[in-house]
Image (cartoon, rainbow, N blue to C red; front, side):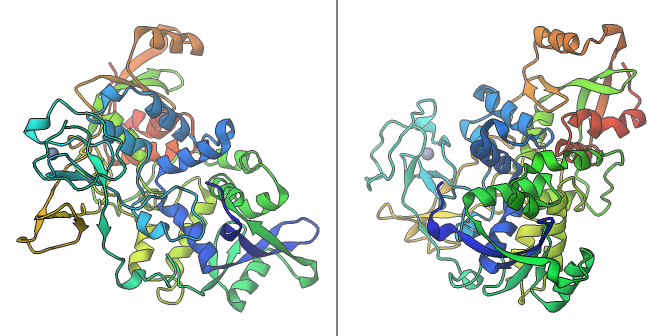
Length: 498
Ligand SMILES: [Zn+2]
């Protein structure tokens, strides 16, 4: 999406003259909203945007890139529905209605769409969903109609993928009036530090920033104007994930990933993520790991569909929710700062409401995204209810409508079942989370590549509960050995060597 002149921000940035080190940028609520919206982006969307924008130079972000590319390459027959795979590849943002009002959008956000089957009975808000009418089962054909003209209810054509229809969306109510900001209070002004702390624009904040940076003499400070268009916002998104100084990186044209790689490596997750606050779910998943006994490196894991479903579902978790799950202690240093500073901003004075704040700090998943293999205690938005005019084809999305005039339509779960990945199937997962169907040749080639004699390989059964899952999530953000690093602490605890 090309940013136009209108989509640009002109930021007043204060730097130290000699080093070009950014002290802070003065940002308005429109810019702050764009920055804050990063927290609403699901991990899969972040990966997709980075791949689309940077191509082969996209940062690998631990094992996220290989997990995402592996998902792209896994045959559609391993998912209950085509729609389910698409939901994972293009995870919906549960704040998309809010983000559609951002001054600059880094993702293509389309307004909520509605799909209706040819019988006018089933409906979905996701594309490529098959209807469940008995008379149409098995003859599913794709329809590319943009907007279907109204037809009689009895016109029973070929049944198939539901076709897209016009939808009347209830105007945003109350707090979402268009004159307001998206997440922050309109007209609010902030100081954004180089490491992405968002502070109220006040003399106290300013003094704190200057002191923290050891500035004794204000003559060493220089003011610059920085133009932020789509390219710079993408740099900011990338920098927020890989750098401690994303603003300085942008001014200096430094490749953020290269500059901070060493410091990121220092953060290796030897400690288990302690998150006692989280409610425990009862989901436990068993996998079998092929372990190089002397180094305790996990060469690959063999699992059922539940573990693969869990791994792919990581891509659907919004960044703010990842921060919440990991107690705001991730390898994304600048995002940790952003998250912490938002939690401190006052509701009403800087943040619009408690609701907008929780959309950022603990976002929910969109409807139908919660899988039965989800180990984390995540929440899902309730599904919208769609009504159809009894004497016509008009559709409305309202909470409740008079039943004599409006007919409630049957909302179909786009995943097909209560999870995305189809079973029973055995899958193979590499250390960097590439999922595939096992073959003897692929296993032999892995062993050959690593030059490991078979006598040194042992099979280990591991149970994945919430602690293990959190540890895998944490490791997946930084390491290309997500299984080894994530499960290292548990290899010792669980002693089921085979
Ligand atoms: Zn139907």
